Length: 316
Length: 282
Image (cartoon, rainbow over all chains, first blue to last red; front, top):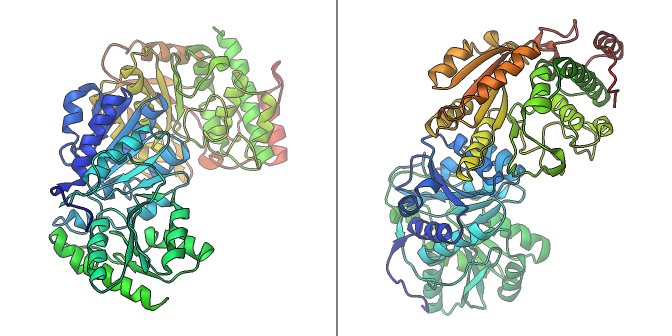
């Protein structure tokens, strides 16, 4: 594989580093949390900019509104909590105060997906991408490793408008270039191939690369594309790769309904009908377990992606 | 500064606007609009530091206002137009296709004077707290006002915001509740048992002022007292003891006019009761 794991790190720590850098670059950047400063890795920002760190207590709905108000006065607020509590719990607040209200709020969504692990299904949202994608004008970012999360955070701060920034809890391989600037709306071709395209996002990008390695042993050249921006989707990149390979897999740590799979299937159905196989959490809730065990049990790891690629190939 | 007589005249004209707007649109919320007309008139014409000519959404250097109870757009739009934010003639477009005067406030139509979208209840006090905190961070020495409904205060988020504003010492925040005791389904205490709002806000740690919502002398005094809270480190809540549908006998004091519209003959009767003003109808 052309990518090397430079040492496992959690993507939430990438957010913490990105937030500090964004705060150093722009004095209008402020950070809010609902009693999860440590979990969101906001400590360094809070230590350097105590006046710009706003503790909201366990009151996420209020936090969204406060952030919207701060944004109206010219601040660039990042609100941080677990993915479920900054999406499902406050969907209507985000809809009115941020999306419809056109406020420059960044939603920092940690512990997303099933890899939150042992806390179990109440905390493991597999529906957040669907909720945020549904909001007109919302940018949805889902970086794949520590380095990319640093850069995505900096890009989110610079972008003028609502952004949903999704990242996770567990330590995972860190393999993208350290200073690769993050371009919102651009898919990243990780691995060129000609037989099948694997579109992946977040933690499944590394799994897709492992799957591509395994497929290569069987003589299958898989193209792996990192969809770090789920909305706006890089439709040109999706159509171009599907046109080249003629078979597609979409892998995501999210359920089927409203996820990246449906987004890509929609683009292909309208522009370039192509067989698509889906690797996702289907229509289920999670459960307690280690992140690795859960990724395997819910069919989201490399072997499942490779299997899906073979299925897609057969449907060409 | 307008005299109390002048404010009364403006308030009468605004009540005429409210009724004519909802009747033209055949929808809208006249009840709460009429209970809050008097104190909002005093706010926009005497109390708020604001200038329609230089208005910007970031509110820098000016006082700001959030209508948390977003359904009270009839009074809000009438006030904004009568205060000079947009032509009074535009009131005729209320709730029509393509209008800037959406059923609930929108920031997507370039309507001057509107700082934030509202309508889904319980959220505006949080946004106002954010504005107040933003002003503090910017060392902008102006006030943020926010109007909530008493029915709206059944939403838990209002109390989250209440805790936040005290914890963050937002003494530049003046929240207000239109305490008319009525909501869509009936009297507030028969719908939700909200109880004594004054005791609740005091327990929450706010400075609380209870004032007559239909007596301009009391209204002006309440605002002065509220503003004197700056420097105290404590936010202020003005509880306006008001009457839903105030100003028209058959609309006053009942929840039935929260979100329903007079028939043509009722409108005629209501306008006769209010009387014409030199300001003229839109």
